[in-house]
Length: 336
Image 1 (tube, rainbow, N blue to C red):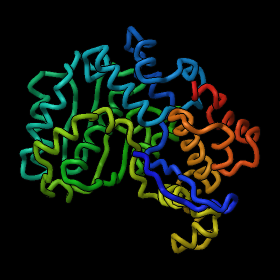
Image 2: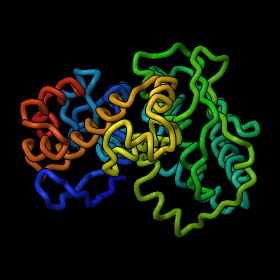
Image 3: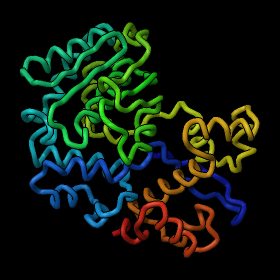
């Protein structure tokens, strides 16, 4: 979701709109992976407003809105919520029916067990199980592990929606080697990661299983207008240090010292915490600028010169160079 904040801009002594991107952009890897089983990739890309040229660069990104539309279009073309990666197709509407059954349960554990029992009726050779606060999933023949990871994200986000609060993950483990785009996993799952694990699992505190389901059929109708595609496009809320830093930067707090003060720690401590998460203050800031730039270019209505100035660049040429470094493409490629 994108929120508008009013922020004073001293350079012009007037109020300007600051776009604070809550949901991070999505790596082009997930678009390429999803298209692997699609016989009409150009139609799907066109329907989502994603230029095919972006597929050629690993650094390219798409907005959450584009990715949501992309997944929806993919389902329409394939009539398959498993997007061609399951042992057999899962017709559109299957997820919605599972939600309808689960929303009437008294608590999260009962809802999840009912959902798993529903999918078991289709005799799918999907190995999905719940043991305490641990989901384990195995899908044979899933190239790039795209469906596996999508379903893990989907069940986690759906669980949070059912009880009306975010469920932080304690860990995420994957039964395959660390991929080249491993940096994206921290943004998606927001918890400690382990690759080459015995099984692919996500884990959360079992206390959440006892929490009541707070949604009803009316809320479900609103929820299903854009879900589950919208759930797949959301990044985790970011309870880690990098997430807190990103939110403060998005609200207009500038500089390492100022952000550290807002978090109640010293600047060296903030640097150490970010380093422990495999990132840095500069990297978090550049990721935020990148996401804001991509969102603005796709949305339109703001010239490159205005965007460069708003993001703090002294001139458009400097912004062009930075954007090329971030995404591998020119700003014009995204505006197209």
